[in-house]
Length: 205
Image (cartoon, rainbow, N blue to C red):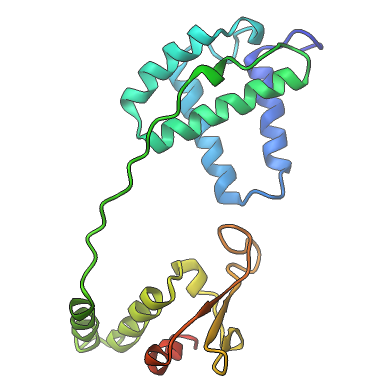
C-alpha cells in the first residue's frame, strides 16, 4: 500500500516484521503475540482487507464487546494491546491519524487465590515424596525444596550450576536459559538462609 492508503493487513505485515526483528522480546513472547494476532483476525471478519483509515472507535468497541465475552481478561488485554500496536504502525506510516483502539478499556485481571500449604504441611509433603520409594524420590524432594525456597522457575532452576552457588555469601546467581536468559532478561542473585543451605544446593548437580 502507498503512503496515505493502507489496509489493516498491510499494517499487520509491517508489524509482524518489526515483531520478528525485535531482539528485546523472547521467542515465547513473539509466539504469544502471534497468537493474539490470530485471535484478532479470526474474530473480526474482513479486518485484514479493511481500509485502515475507516476503522473507527465504534468498530473497535463492537469487536471488543464480543471478544471479551469469549476470552479471559489477560488474553483480551494482550489482544487489545496488539490491535493498538498495529494501528500505531499505520499512524507511523502516515496512513491515519489517531488510534481508535485506545477507546477500548482493558479488562480487570483478578489475582488468583492461591491456597498454599502451611510450613509443617510443606515439610510433610517433601518427606512424603522423599520416602515414596521411587528411584528418583530423593532428587524429586530436593527439587521441590529448591524451587520453593529459591523462588525459581523450572527453566531457571534447570540452568543453575555449582558455579552459580556462592556458599560464603549464601547466594545463588540466576542466569536463566543460555540463549534467552530469564523472563525479564535480568541476572539476579537469590539469598538463602543457613537453615535451608544443607539441602538447597543438592540440586545444583
